[in-house]
Every structure is written in C-alpha cells, then in structure tokens.
Length: 228
Image 1 (tube, rainbow, N blue to C red):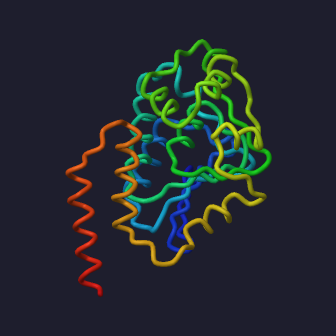
Image 2: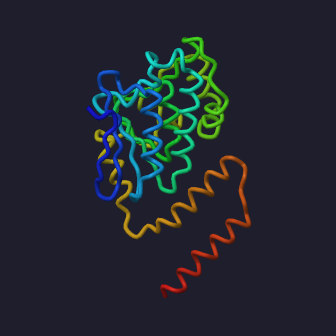
C-alpha cells in the first residue's frame, strides 16, 4: 500500500497521507516524501489530506524515540517546503490533528476541517520540549492564549473553537471538496500568486525586501501592459 497517494483533481494536487493503520502517523520517510511532493508540484495548488477519519496523529513514536533529532529536522524541512511552495497549500482536515501534524497544518496557507477535528499537542505530557523552529511558526500564526492552551495545558481544541482560535479557516462537512473549490477562481495569475505568497512569508518573518517587491511589481505591470 502506498503511504502517500497523489491525485490530480481540477488541476490541484491532492496529496493524501495513507497510513490508516497508524492513524496517518508521520515517519521520517513519509515526512521527507511529502515535502518532495509539495516542492515538485506543478499544479495550480496543493491540498494535503489524510485517509480514514484522522488527519494525522503526528510523529510516529514507534520510529522516533531513537531518532528524535532526525525526525524534528525532517519536520522542519517539510514546514519549509510547505511555507516556501510558490502556490497556495491547503490542509483538508478530516479528523484529529495531533502533535507534529498541527505544525504541518499551520504551515499551510488555509485549513478546512470537518466537525470531528480537534487539535492537540501532547509535548508537555510526553516530557518533550518543543523545538524553537516549531514555536516560531506557531507564534506567527496563533495567539499567545491559543499557544498556552495547546502547549502548556495540553488542551484539545475542537472544531468551532478552533475557528475562533485561528487554527481552522472554516468548517465544512466535506473539507476536501471545499478545499478544491477554493482553487476554482478563474484567471488567477500563478506568477503573481507565487510572488505574493513570498512577500506574505517575508512579512510574517519581518524580512520584507522592498527593492525586490518593486522589481516584481514592475515586472508584472509590464506584462499587463503588453497584454493590453
């Protein structure tokens, strides 16, 4: 059985974690393969989903205990691939999202979830100090209160509460179909989408390059003038 399944739907790559026997737990090999698929996609957009009734239970703890450093490094590479992808990446959350999978979901640009979703990061319960790279991503996306609930109190945050907490963009009975529909707008300029995402990421990281922005703006403006 393939542990990751890729299907092209309406010019969108749907990448599905397919390890239902382990609740789609993330091994180092699966993490690296997922990152490669996101980086190499040439579709209009990418959707990351999970098979069965769980998005992902996080790092596969049966593989990780003796390879924690390698697993965390792999997760950092995956987050960088998702954040740096020159197209929108949407998480279609079909159920619980736990541990490192929360980081994967938060790296995505948009998250659509069904009503059975909950978010949980059990690091403190497991005696694991969450690494700085992951905390940096969380602090760019989530409030201090939400992070305290997840990281200090090990709280499970369910669907509707997850929306107000900023963990979920919207709730849907069919998150995959809703995620695909987000890419249905006609006439989106893929080059501008890529450049805009790059600027958004730079802003979140406090590293806006105004000279680069002006150069890109002029390039796209010139392309528009030539089309007139």
